[in-house]
Length: 265
Length: 256
Image 1 (cartoon, rainbow over the protein chains, first blue to last red):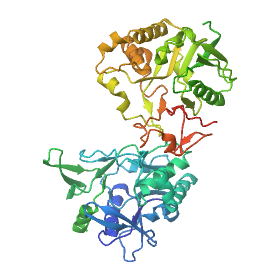
Image 2 (image 1 turned 60 degrees about the vertical axis):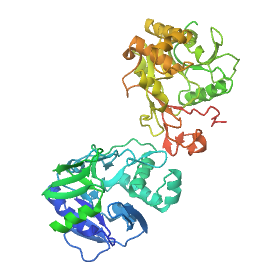
Image 3 (image 1 turned 45 degrees about the horizontal axis):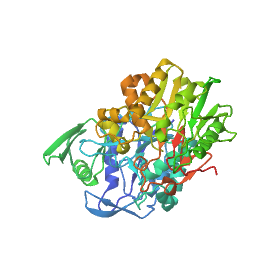
Image 4 (image 1 turned 45 degrees about the vertical axis):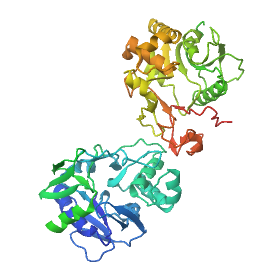
């Protein structure tokens, strides 16, 4: 059985997702010992075991808080991961997911066919993520597409096919779930797809820990190998910082992560 | 009331000025019978009801005392040695007979907590302020089990006493209601007896899906106008329901 990571990397004018993915690939190999494939529309890429070329599709825009601007966001291809992945077992990671430990090894070793995070939390503990862990006016439970493990199997294929169906009929599903977000989001499509494929129940296995996240308004810097510092202002308006060490996390602010990647590659 | 069967469901179906609870009870009984054709189901009524979905239709033994104040009569009216009392304005969205196994070694079980239609614990405390302010157990009388026992007799004796002497009992509470709700009365009785003696640990026993606005949450009171729902199987906004759904909108009769 082949096993590897898969990262989507479609740059926009402000964010070099390919460099981020290449930097992440090094971390993945170092900690998890698995090869890494990238899916991108760029020709000049290196640092990956497989390069899968794919055209950008979709014309999404979203607000990036750390850049304080609306930017293009090419996220429509994620539901093609099943079809494009070269691996029997795939660890599908966002380019901004920082692998700083081997904790995903137990996800790869899990007997489940498909796993994702149900919960995310602010690594600093400052922000309540209860709004982010649900979507829509009626608070549909949200599953995060940031880290997804899947095997090539009918169950996973159905989930990705259903994500594509949701993507292709986004207006319908957006209204059904009273989702005020006009832009398509893979997290929302994944959440809907998991429900549909699992018999319209919300009872299925997930990665058994929360997705540690660093929000865009907090400053992220690298201290050393697998050591990161997060500077933030607490509720009392006092400057504070924490160190994240040997712990994976989701760098929701691409700007700071981009600076780290640019400095150390 | 003489005992005629070992186990059965009892549904109070006493109409109020605004709600046809008998109609609700028929709908609930039909939904139970869909899953359990051989279930024993009794309606507790004031006016005659001849719907064949019920095995028995029993009048309130002490007459209609008005609204919630009838509740303690369920203990005296039930023809079963083991009874599950269900509030009428609910639908059984799946099998419920495994409850008997959960309950059978207890004398009284009042359901604890509620769920939203995603089957997640109801987080909103909007409707439960008096419980929190008075440290009362978070009981819902919508599902209540008892077996004929000294414990059950004591529990319903307390329920009767609290209803009949509310003016005195309410002085024990911070911010009491003018008129007692059954849930508050059950919670007070549970607290007096010790919550552990009349509840199962949180997450063990069944609890209701509560479709009240602040729990779901919806923008308006009437979720049936706001969410997509379908029957057979019963799904709300595509999510399959199980156990008992307390639909709360009293005119909601999807099988008509």
